[in-house]
Every structure is written in C-alpha cells, then in structure tokens.
Image (cartoon, rainbow, N blue to C red; front, side, top):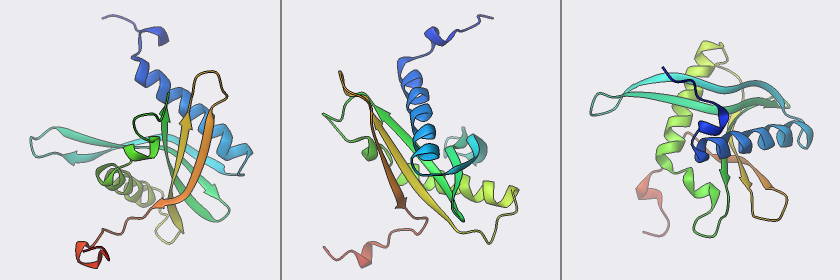
Length: 150
C-alpha cells in the first residue's frame, strides 16, 4: 500500500482544504463564530444504484445563539461560474440531511440553526476574496406552484 503525501493529493482537494482554512479563520476572527466541529461526516444511506452516500459539513459553529452549518466553496476564479453556483439544490439537500443527523446526535432539537455559505476565490495576484452568506438556504423545499414567475 502506497503512502500519499499532501503533494500527491489531487489539486481540487488541496484547493478545498486551503479554502476551508481561510474560511475558518474568517468566520472565527471577523465574525466571532465559535467553532464546534469541522468536517463532520456521516452516512446518509444509499443512492438508487445502491452506492453509499455520505454527507459532510465543512464547519459547524455558533454565531451567538444560532448554530450555523457552514458550507465552504473555494475557486481559483469565477470567470466561468460563481463559487456559490456549486451549492445547488442537491447539495443543499445533502447538507440539510447531514445537519439533521448532527442535531439528533448532539440532542440539539430545539436550537435555532441556519445554513451559511462561505466562498473563497483565489484570483491570481490578489489576496483571497472571502464572502460570508448568512442564511444562504433553508431546509424548506421549494414549491414550484408558488413561483411568482410561472
């Protein structure tokens, strides 16, 4: 069995880890979040083909009395798509399911909570651009019949 070093890891994983480190420091020091967990992961079941599904939450922290489940998205550029675009409804559903498991395991049924997003963009030649989106999405499913555009 081959040991892997950090340099052997795929570039997208190293970028994600780097983004999470920047995001963690940002929410702690700029916004006063109290970190309670990082990279919480749990099995969520199986997909239609029978493959196991795991959910992960990058950062779990308290912002005052509110428990924040924080998804972090890091990009080298937003020239093609924004970092936030990667948090589609499927990703939101997975994060929400993972958060339910966490709240159940930690006996946090009555706690106020929300889902935040931190985007970290490492544009060349500049400092990382970090943005916190509090309450980026909710667990409430979208009702297509309530769409005002239809």
